[in-house]
Image (cartoon, rainbow over all chains, first blue to last red; front, side, top):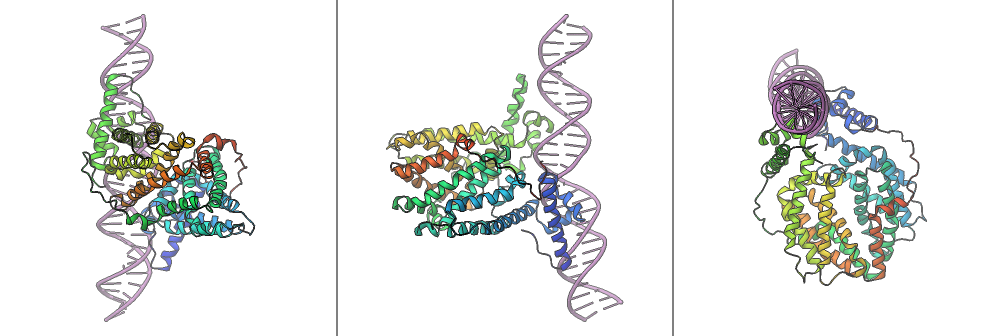
Length: 235
Length: 235
DNA sequence: AACATTTTTTGAACGCGTTCAAAAAACGAA
DNA sequence: TTCGTTTTTTGAACGCGTTCAAAAAATGTT
């Protein structure tokens, strides 16, 4: 992601740049917050902004990270004992949409930085996964022992799907994806319960195996490339 | 999407523009195929290209549509009787990656035009859905009667997930997402079989209901908006 | 043929994200 | 203090997607 400054002054400049950018994003939105505007508001030249941040998406990644942290803190109060898995799932999703809603315009670019591994999405993923772990371990009754360890990963998968629906949701106030969040929680909770049955449980494990890079690497998917008629050059 | 010309000459110009663009995409890749280059190669001015296509993404949408059609035709030969659901699923996915692989560079923008409803993605979705319908109705043994009607929609959902994994897959030759395609087919097929059990079947129906706009609209997800501290302006 | 209207085509411009060579400043060793 | 090196900062430029007013050509009516 961003370059780490060598001097104290540099660190301050970078911090000011980031703070200005986040303010600008919040107040003016994504399109109006051009790198030129951000740099000007921070009192530095345009090219200097690129000395501290490799790209505009880099700054957006920071914004997403901050928002996930905000969501994380928002959730800390609601994982009291006695909550069902379903209500915990809803709590996490609701906190997410509450924090992200003002930035719905950023949806597509959020999704992009999340999917392109290059950025600091690792940190974002860590926070998300941690949230789902809390949702699982704080649920009463506890989900079946056999899936308890992997359920958070599954919830991360589901939540990514919900997120991409939200990101491109053009209905008013994101009505559709909000409804999806509301309805998906009981389904997942029901699925977790059903995992007590061996049949369903093995299905769960199959799905989890699909997410595991090791499982995928073991398979031989290296059929030689056919020479296509139209083959574009690498970019 | 694109504007329909009023005269015959206009139709030819638009066709030439599109053909040139698709050739250019295939030969030079996405980045190198700027609107200026495309217009120049087609022998028209830059602004004239925008007379026939509202945006560059519009042309990419056409490319994706063509590729899906190509995939569709590629699949017509392989749905002979006697194929299992699993092999049919793999056939559709394999045909897809075979057709799309030379355009992997377009992955992110493909995903974008697919998710933003504005474009002619309806046509693309129709073709995809039709492929999954054929995969289901051509499978022997036939999937359980109760899910036969909705299984294609479910497969479309799954394939969209696979597609987004492929689109951002940075491993060599998209090794990871190809392995995912290989491994996901038997899991889905197994799931279909398990839908004979009432428990699993009701899970399937729950998931399907999540995709149905009517179901979502019925729920009251209209909690009034909280006034956020930072509220960006609309773009 | 002449004219008003519609359709096609153009050139010029805007602001954007990004890059780069080089100036300015800060720093460390002599 | 001086000088070589690293770090910070800048101005200018590039090509991009997109827009727009206006020219040019085609069309239809009288």
